[in-house]
Image 1: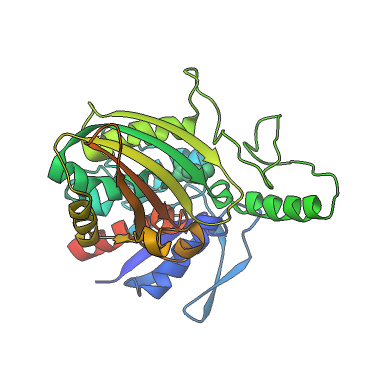
Image 2: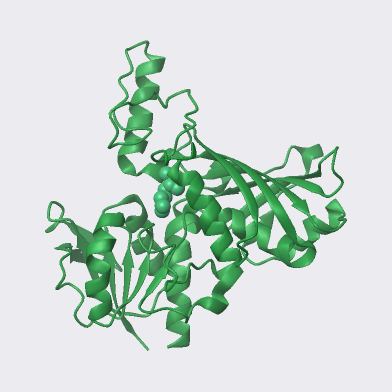
Length: 341
Ligand code: 11C
């Protein structure tokens, strides 16, 4: 069976990767509609050696569309997803607009693909930093159980879009040349205060909510509970932006409910879908953001026991935030939908 597919947000960092993956994975497409803002409409993008002209995304864009992949920001999704659903499309939404809606499954295929069909037209794709963490935690949850997770993230600027990548490179050059650095976008484009990202670490991703945590941290906490199907999980997170272009890194500490052996954890994770263990400290082998860029997997290393708590486990989890963290997870969901149709 072939599908009419629409991509909303075609010119964005994630949209571009979605289009590339649809082509590389030979997704069964009858017609591909590339949608964008009015500003980008009329531009052309190559797909399978043919040029497709971008059209402005409007409420009328979804007639005859079977699957629509959204990554144009939460407000666009809130406005257009209901129209796409009404037109009969299954929407895979990469924004935070519907993630916590009880009628919307929040899917990481390696963790909860069994919930795929519980949708009412919308399937949500989780936040990038959540996806890579739960993909690595799920095999441990099933084998040992756990209730306490403590995570610190080291997140790439591409998570904040193309303009944040450009800003990081521009600031780095200015800094090296001894010129004045004028931050313009990070940490949050819409807020008045900006901070230098070049040669820096910014402990703020997204806006603050009223409990002292950022929205990014709250997403990791709430989405993890929903995906793992365990509201009792105790999770605390600090999210930090660092001047890496692609690939989020995470230091994750988890207290397991049973005794464990480090070698057994390595073996369990090595066999888990979508996970690659890179963990040979004596050879200085561990996951690196630079090595994860362009790959679909989640990389896990630095697996070791807490010296104070024998049930405490530390790991370093890395993945390309635009791929498994966004475009690949979304296309993977689309592949499951296609397979089941
Ligand atoms: C970042 N995690 O790195 C964010 C980007 O909710 O899908 C993804 C935002 C989201 O800035």
